[in-house]
Image 1 (tube, rainbow, N blue to C red):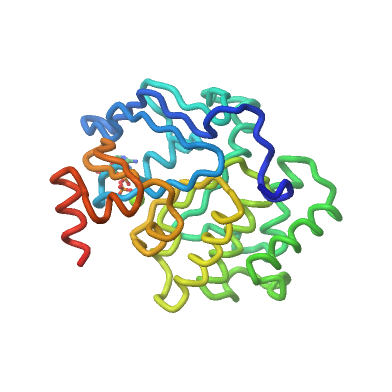
Image 2: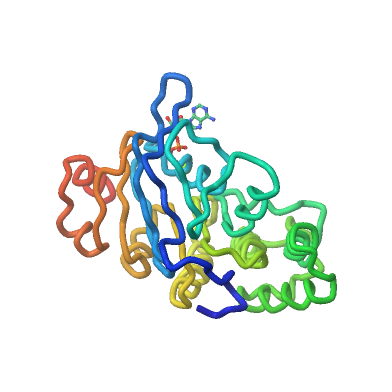
Length: 254
Ligand code: ADP
Ligand code: MG
């Protein structure tokens, strides 16, 4: 992995480990005994019907949501409940959402430099230089002085990816990153994600883009009703799903 892109791992074990994770929303058992390990450099695509818990799973990994029991480890370190250690571990987990969530009143460049300056105490000149490198990589360097609303959805989402990468995360989470985009902009974002995957970034991607899953995923994790129902290599999953739920899900895609 390009050292400038991803934070160096400190353990030799998985980058993400979820151990018997349970979560409820009131009576709803939204995550049911989830066990999941994601190795360094692995690209895991999470598939499943709407409401199956995919977003909640992602959100627990950077502690946007609490868990009721079980444990989550990032590069061998247990995610703490709060405090400075949490902030540090969170910086290791980049997240890209369906709605780009850029800071509306900051320029594209400022959107990318803010985290490193505030959270990692990187000096402005260095943060600017790193941000420009990342903005070039995702193809929007010439937009650096604009506000988010002046960019297309696809450009905004690529800025959101650059912003997450600026923190040098150990893992990148993508929660339906192309679902809010006009069709003609989906591919440019997927291409950026494929490039990241090819460079060895550890990624967990919730998506309905089966082309991406086939091309970039090392493993498909299929969820239904808060459970991981099956997991397999993409070609196995798509050609020979084992569970009735997965067969039903794939049948509805055509
Ligand atoms: P997915 O991303 O697979 O569509 P989610 O993780 O968003 O699924 O949601 C899983 C279930 O949890 C759904 O039934 C949803 O309505 C419910 N849910 C999600 N967030 C909340 C919340 N903050 N409070 C209560 N229920 C929620
Ligand atoms: Mg979701």
